[in-house]
Image (cartoon, rainbow, N blue to C red):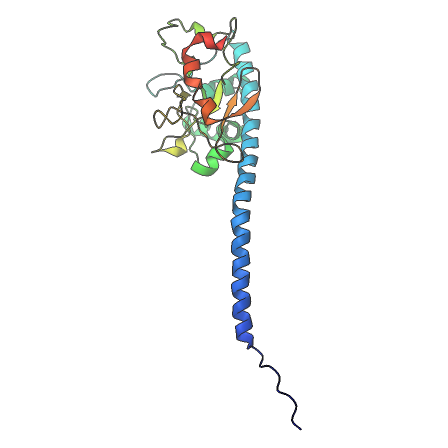
Length: 246
């Protein structure tokens, strides 16, 4: 008597193809979950590093103010002026001269820690960086400190007096990069902070926080806060109306 016939088995090749499709599907699902999570974690980590930079910048500014009769450096730099950027000014006030020749300055910017502090790691990771002797970086000084304002022809607004600015709006923030030369860092000051951007160069960088949609600001008292786009839109009128800053 013949034994009953067994069901025919699938070929190893068939099992391999099915398993391969299943593995690919699983990997795709895991990647779809992991990539955004990794991005948020990375953004949070780099934002934390930028926060640490701003703490150090606050200490540098404090040293500069103590050495300069409590007068802030001007927030604007132009190639036609004999001045350096505010970043280089506050750095040298605390750490000594970076040198005279361009090669010497560039080398000291890297060896002394200037580049690490004045360049935001999050912005550098996205846009890169190029150091110049003038003192480029990723952070912008409040445009309130721009000289030549008709309200303050003698630059008195750069002195600490009375109810000083910086309580309701930041004195330093991460700034946007120039679209045609992002490696050069942020523009030298942020006067126009309304969102959407008024121009490509004069607004805040909203690339911080886990979602990459917050600005980051250092206040006069040393606190550092993430700022929404809606809050950022209120900074421009604040900087133009002294009554709101008291």
